[in-house]
Image (tube, rainbow, N blue to C red):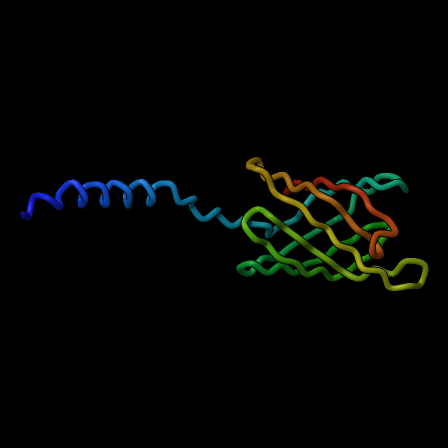
Length: 130
């Protein structure tokens, strides 16, 4: 009678092993700390802002500087290869939110979109660590 359950037990073990190897691994956390060479394109033209980030777990802080948006403190998050930073810029004397959202590829290139003042101006960007 004990041997009647062996095929069932074998099937259960095989199923468990297959499930174990098909579970997707947790993606590695992208390291965003450092200075970034940025290129931003909008309808207003192309700019080359300076960006320096410090990463603590999933949280980012840093400095952003460009001729268009000035010098600003940034905050953000990293989740796997998804990265978002934001800050408040002064545009013609008015405070405007600026949000960069993108992903970092296998070569360490960060690309995505920029949203300024809630969609009043948008564009794309590319960043690489210096």
